[in-house]
Length: 95
Picture 1 (tube, helix red, strand yellow):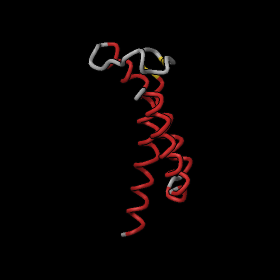
Picture 2: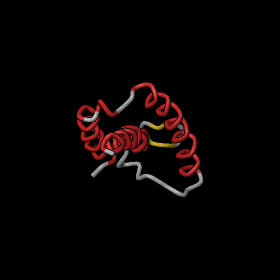
Picture 3: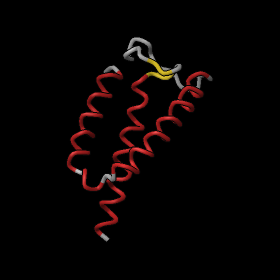
Picture 4: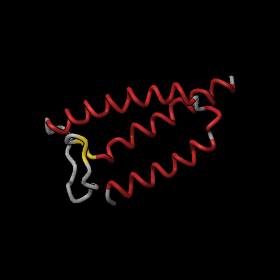
């Protein structure tokens, strides 16, 4: 399976999850966290890829890169930005 297909599947699932959990996702804090987290992902993913710690098969990625990091690599950050605060707020409301 290629990274773009895997990314679309994961982001599709989490888009549905985000709609279902929207009352547990405060927009302003998540947006602020997104700027910080995506910026950190940009810096550190480029570092670990440029140093050779991680590498991607060029035939399995979309080809669009930010620096040396493939765009698909940012999907994990987007998932965390939805999953962590929504679960935190859901579980906090249950206590």
